[in-house]
Length: 515
Image (cartoon, rainbow, N blue to C red; front, side, top):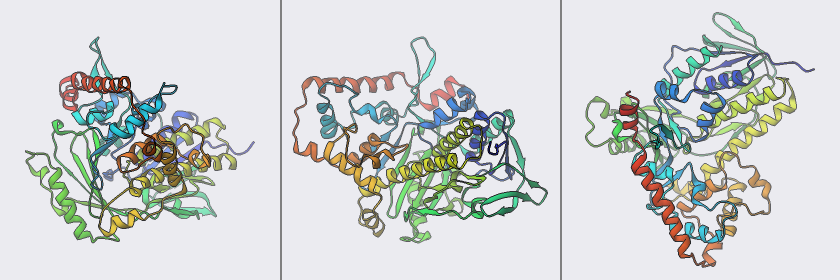
């Protein structure tokens, strides 16, 4: 039998490194798992937003107790990405329950539902899914059932305070016999692409498998000759700052607005409001971008906010640089790269943390399902899945720019950017067949490559930013009064449930949990 992987050493104790350690340990309990990092350093203030799958990862696969998690980490629940102003289109949301907008399988007269959604409901502020209503009404997913017990609508994600989240993950690692080693790697010994051992100033470390989770530093990956797939997004820089905000002002969504040379984010955590500007340095100087960002910060400061935390100076602003793309082989020889060490796509849809946590679970499952055998075929199978993940994220983000608008040099360049044959196929499929994503189309293999984001996700965003379908434009379908009535009742019921039953974040934390 081929060599068995018994010892894994992860370099990098950020969120992805710790989640990788917990995943490997959970699914391969006989493996010795260590994480090496300078744990005295401050936790980077990035990666606060997630998407829906994070719930399954944390509380399902990793079996992290939800009540303890909430008590210690104090997350804010995220129900959507709220495009408050995207290229001057009317405000819209990309919620985590988009299929609820469309008819289910085997629905009679389904075309009337599709057409009604396309023609009338897609941008209606009065016809919102539960996720969209949570955002519109500023509510959490938590509510009291008739018996008085708390329950949660499950199609939501999290916003984290990264310091509190990382500290919680460290405690989970220690409880599950993951060794946390406070050290700094200074030298890598290799033979070709094989990592022989790694060293600090104090000692050397040997392992059957090494994991590079060092972010953009790419301490181990930088020693391997691996092709990098550059997505060629011009967005390459970001400003970031935090301001004070009360729990009463929490917005349960990642809020997006466009700027002259990129886009702004607003992410509410338990402690503050995190604000950022992702921009393309090719089109604007740092000074001009910073001035634009500070104007956005002023506008995003809640009314009535006072105190030092509501006043932002240039010195308070952090600056980051990044390149969008990925290495075409995540697992090379005896080294896996994960997180930003493997790849990154500009963060419009907050994909980094959750996507990499999902890949960590998948990697741990590969080890478990194949007896932790060091096998080239298993390695390549995993690498192919990683490539699909990055390409799917790239496609979904790219669609936002394919339908963008704006007269600055940056936005004009983005409108001319060619994303991929898959996004062209998605647009053509929507144009020809409308919302029916079950139809068997030519070149279906291209659409089969989608992972994470699927056709309902694409169509929901595309329609809100100007995409049209020839099928609906050339066929004027009549929508029966019964279907109109059913849709009205469906959405009114959701709105009333959220208004009457759901708690605000402030009510949940202060009145129910007494935090």
